[in-house]
Length: 294
Image 1 (tube, rainbow, N blue to C red):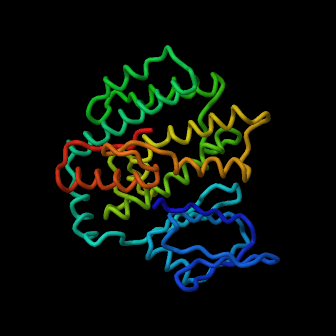
Image 2 (cartoon, one colour):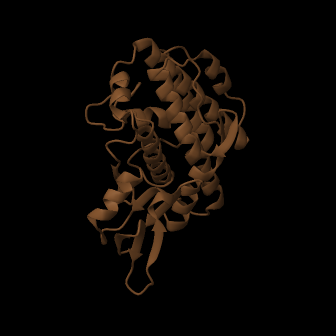
């Protein structure tokens, strides 16, 4: 069963009762949801109160809890310290990953990302671009930086020549930022469930980033968000904004069907297969890595 993504954006009190998350709002009847059914919980209001018990239950059930900032973008993620029975062994093997394995995995991730970007442009009826050729040219570790070369072409073809990707921007950028942040939390959740540590990346490395591996594995999934944002922009008559309706549409991204290991699965479910494949490549030397494809 696909896990639920729940966003709370009004004043509320969250508590735990009989393994259920109980949401109390003034003037409304209480609502309860089984903790085991939740995959991602998004808290987007400064007047939300919660008990320690609900956070502990979320941790025990590998629920990613996102706390949003004043711009309504996820600013913090709460994840369990241990999500797998072989956690210590897996972490030790992850820390000893060889450079050839690291570069090979990054090559596969970049190829998958560019391939998905090409599919988004195809869906948007944009042709005459070199992205399909770039996929075949990516070498181990992507020393030629085809990821960046593809991105420059991709953004201008998708959103126009004046568009610039800005993590601090508004309009289209704020929709992308929200979608990426939710996807990042879901990826981090799957990583912890596979016994890996989200801070130990393959390509991304920053001592101040606790989610380097999540950012690595997120890359080929970004185009799924891009497609949703493109579809939203086509429907919206005015400047895109982060509204309850647009957030609802972006959260639907985790429910879209994708292909992995020869199966069609919801993207949220496929993330666990994806993380497990990465763990096998790191710990068991598995050569072939399956990445979700839309």
